[in-house]
Image 1 (tube, rainbow, N blue to C red):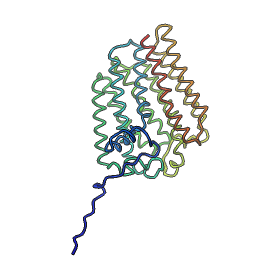
Image 2 (image 1 turned 180 degrees about the vertical axis):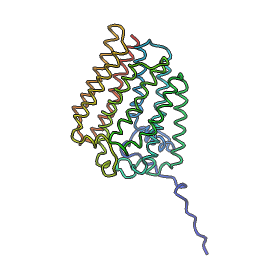
Image 3 (image 1 turned 60 degrees about the horizontal axis):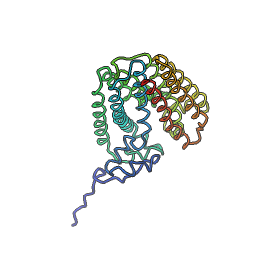
Image 4 (image 1 turned 90 degrees about the vertical axis):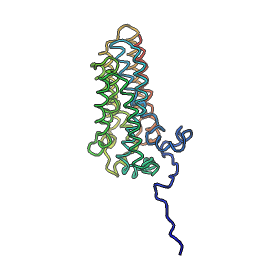
Length: 324
């Protein structure tokens, strides 16, 4: 009698390397070693816009600190640590988000090809990857002063809560803004060991900016979100979204202007530079508003990604003002 054939378990079978449906053809798909690809996709390394949006408020904080105080050589180290930390913590945040949302993601066409719902990464593997990224972020944080370290630890609660926000509030973008713009406070404190009204104003400006760009992003998923009961500002505002977006943009620009004024730039050239920061940011948001079309999925993603340039305009001109 023939012995029964022992079939391999799912965990013993290599899962096909499947690109994420809405991010195919990126550097991870083309260049990364095959074994690393699912984990890099879990961290959203295949779409770096989120890392930029986490990093840029940090650079705003450094620029404002340079204006309010003076440039220091340590600012270069802070900027570099923020860069590495943003990569690590954005990856950790996305991993945590996918762990908590794995059942929702399996029901949405745009997200069911992500590593967890598609089976490319196990839950245990995702948790271990989350810990590894968090440890790298902690290592970067510990290069800074204790004021920054304490602020960094305080942000963990916001990071932990955000993935659940869309289940209990129509305003999950507020929680994203609270978490993503925390770097404006942290980086300012890392410069001189204290906070300043300019940093707080920049933080609130960043929250309004996040409400602006993430509402645009959320319009891609309104139909799927309605089917599975996920809340968002895009669903809440509906056809009134252009008016709300204009309000968020105006609030962000005014708060940013208040932040740079409170930092008290010294000298004509520095004042011209901060004016360029605010004006350039305002013009970019106005450009996005003119092109906003909730029915154009590709256009919505393009507008969302363009916010890297909006934030870079501010960071660059603040750095120039600080150096001047």
